[in-house]
Amino acid sequence: MVRKSFVCIVMGLAILAAGCGGAGELGSIGGEPVTEEQYLEVFNGLPAEEQVSVLEPGGRMELMERIVRKKLLLAAWAEDTSVSGPWEELYTVSVLSDSMFRRIAMEFDAESYIDSLSSTGYSSFSLRAVLFADSSEAVQLAEQWNTGNFDQTVPSVSAPWSNPSTESSYRFFSGPLHTLTPVFLPLLEMEHGTAHVLPMFGQWGVGLLELEEGEWVSDESAPGIGLMNLVGVRSGEKLLAAGIRELAGNCAVSGTVLVPAGEGSSTPVAVAGTDTITVSDFLEVMEMASPSNFFGGVPEELAAFSPPELTFSPEITIWFYARSVAQRFALAESASAAGVQIPSGTLDYARAESVVRDRVLKPSIPDSAEVALWYEQNTDMFVLPERRSVLLGYTEGSLAETAPSSFEQLDQLQTIVDEDGEMVATPAQFEVSFGEILGPEIFQAEPGVFSGPVQLDGELAAWFQVVEIVPSGVAALDEIYPVAVSAAANQIFSEGFETLISDLRSSYPVVVDTAAVVEIDLWGGMR
Picture: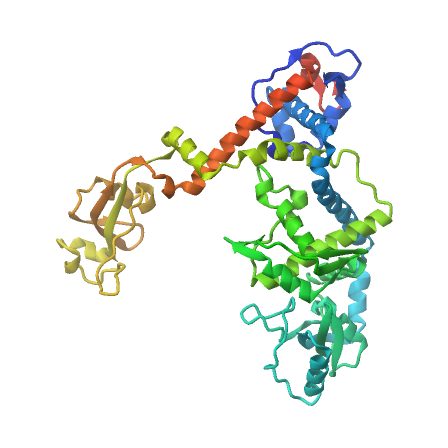
């Protein structure tokens, strides 16, 4: 499918309006025909709102231009197919894993799952759990638990269920039977009320499961949890705690995202099917699916591989990220073994995208000197309107009938003060920041003059004094540096992309039968 976010940069069409020979042909690119069937296939793959835009004046030709650009990029890809190799693998894993997930979902019998839970005779569970690196420590703790000693001071290692604030894996769980953590499902087949040691995540878990007899009551979450448990059983991926810890140590927090920041190693993090995924492998996947490798955002197909949003601690975030990625690789292998085939053209976007990444996106990342030069050439983009800083306070509306001449004369003044009790002025702000009622009053007032009351919505009246006026002017580069970097990169990319397309048109002549394109019946063929 042609992605609008990728080829939405539309310039004047350099198209030769000419007949293209064969029946059903709309044009050619480098001698290769563009057919009506191909055009309709692209149209039918568009979201409904984009299909509507094709029906508008000029819409058919715009879609044709998008098809032309994609085919030009694929022609460029054919010159060096190695440019897309790693990304093709990620797209393949994504498509195959989604296919296998859908197959498992179709096989899942929610009614049978609900019946199986109802027939257990148990309504809920409670579970004590902890993870150790050493088996002897796990055995010793299990023996203590079986005597009623639930001491939690023995050092443990991090697990997916660890306390985010302490990283301790000592946890007590309870809830409806269907919410039992899948890794502890083997305890259902063991003696209940007794602590058991289980091999877990390449280390040793201790679990003590107790079941409450009674009628199990279903809720709307049960089928979904059951399906995900079945997917986990079918995929069979195994995470390794030591590798998880090392992977977390090779990442850093950037804003709200956990990003690769280390050199990696061959330490295994997960086993997915017949593959072992190492710390270095995970870092490579995170880097490949980083937003910096895409113009317009990470494609939906690769979002699961992208550096994760920090949820709890970095290590716990990595537990969930690694499981999701490993499960996709395992499901993809299962799909391939089952004979699932990738639809024709599925990898076209990865290939076209790789050409743009290699020839345009990478060279579009400006260094500090380039940003400074671009800023000097585009200062008109960063002209800031006047800003004002004020002392600002509020009183109940009824007090607005008085005529004070200073803040000191106001009773029950609501304002912000420093540690010495002195009023604190607002930062210099634009008029709109003060609101549609107060803003105009502040920006019409003389500096240094106590002003008010300004009756606001509700029961409050505002009083203020302008203490600083920052005149309209160009923002300094250091004030808007991230914005300047982004704007510079976007402009460099846009110009570079258009240059690339122009060069490709020279190498692969484009011929379009405009009359044939305009006459296409989008729901049946040529009109």
